[in-house]
Length: 131
Image (cartoon, rainbow, N blue to C red; front, side, top):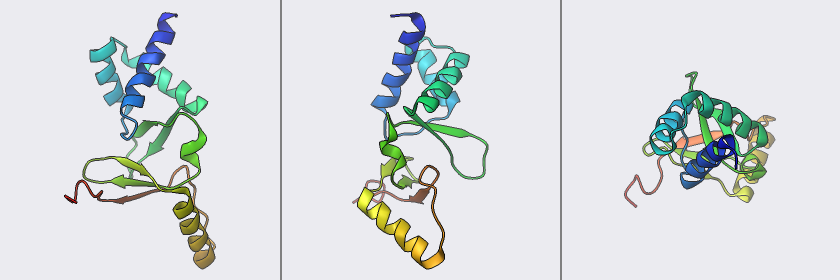
């Protein structure tokens, strides 16, 4: 296994272990510098490659310029909407049938189509509400 492959494996392993979380490239670089001695520029380069391969999802939240990354390992994350807790930051996958129903209702009432790659509904998860 080459050094680059080990670095990529370390990044994928970290992201997979935190699959319900999103990170900025800086946050990932900081964590991986401590855990696996991977440099910041390497993290940025690997994130771009992983996003192109479809293993990592890159998205923006809010009006800021920061990109967030989340491990998805394939197209399963592209065919439904997402829910994001504004308290703990966890991202939830909305069940496909619910996502499809919501998109059909939005289209039927407004003739507006949603971009599943970009659509995140914000709110508070049950754990953060103490349920």
